[in-house]
Image: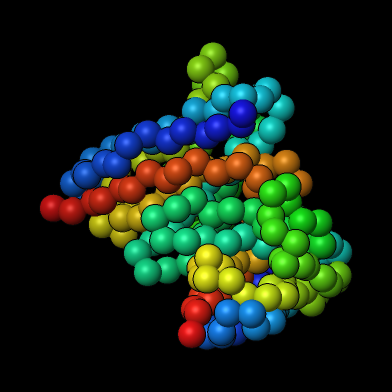
Length: 107
Length: 116
C-alpha cells in the first residue's frame, strides 16, 4: 500500500499568515491526490482534487501543487474559519490512503 | 442537489450485528462509486472500502477485509456498511462519500458506539 506522510501534524498561525502543509507519497502517484478539510462534528469537505484543481465553492486562498511524490496545500491568507484538520488522500491505487492529518489552529 | 444522507447513531453491545446506511439523491446513484471512511475517537481518517452501485463491484482496504461488508441496494439508492459481530474497537464515526475524481460529496456521518 502507498504510505502518505503528512507534515506538520499541527501548526498554529495568525490570521493573514500563509500556511503550507505537505504530503509525501511512498511511491509516485502522478497527480492523483486530494486535500480535505475536516471540522469537528462535520463531514469532511473536498478542497482540491487532482493535486491542483480547486473544488467548486472553495475559496481561492486555498491552492494545491505537486506531482509524483511531493504535494503541498497552501492557504495564502489564513482566516478564522480555516481552523480545522486537513488531510491528503491518494487515489492513484487501492487501497486508498490518507495522510495522518494536520491540525491548524488560529493564534 | 446531490445529497448523501446516513442513518442515525447506533449504540450496540459487543457481539451484536449492525447495518448502517447511506442514501444518495440528486444524481445517478448507479454511476458513481461510494466509499466508506472511519474516524475512531481522537484519530485520523481511514479509508475502508468502496462499491460501484452499478454492478456492486467492491474493493476493501486490507485493514477492513473480512471485518465489514459493503453492499448496495439499487432499488433504494442506498449503500450499506455492516458488521456481523461488533467489537468495542468498532466504536467510531463512519462516513460515506461519493467518488468522482475525488470524494466530492459526503454523508453527515453515523456514530457507532459499541459498549457492554
